[in-house]
Length: 175
Image 1 (cartoon, rainbow, N blue to C red):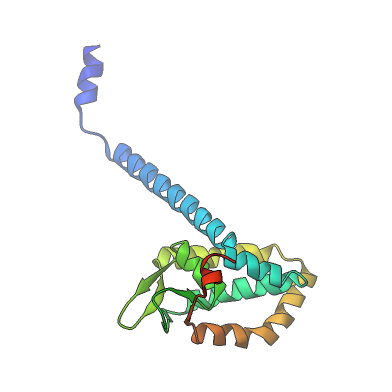
Image 2 (tube, helix red, strand yellow):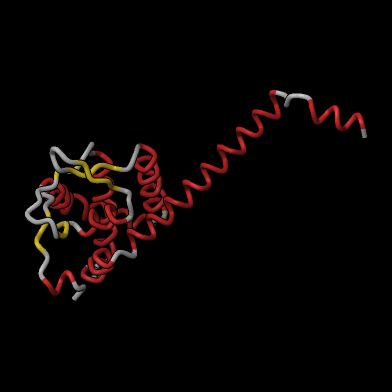
C-alpha cells in the first residue's frame, strides 16, 4: 500500500502526459464534429432552405446543385459583401441566410460582409461536400456536371449581388 502511495506521488511520465493530451484533442475533435453536424442540420432544416427544396422538387439534382455550389463558392471567397437596405432585412440567398443563422457565417462591418466562422468550418464544409458528391451514381454525376455548366454562372452572380431585402409583414411573420 505504501508503494502505491509513493507511485501516485511521482510526476507523470511523458507518455502519460502525451496520452492525456491526445485524449483531450480527440474529445475536442469529436465535440467540434458533432457541433458541425448540428449546424448542417440547422442549415438543411432552415425554412428558407426547405422552401428552396420544395421549389426545386421537380428536379432533385437542381437543389443539390444550388446548395453544394453555393457552399463551394462561399468556401472559395474570403468574404461575401452584403448591401443592406434595412435593419429588418432578409438575405436574398436562402442558403446564405441559413448559414448565418446556424453560425457557420459571421457578420463583419466596415464594409458590411459575411465571413466563414473560421478555417475549421471551411475545411469541414468542403469535406462535407466531398462526402455528399461521393454518394452520387455515375449517371447522377453526369447530370450534375451538365447542369453545373449551365447554372454555375447564375449561382456565382447571386452571391456577387448578395443583398438584404426588406421584409413585408407577412414574410416577417413566416407567411
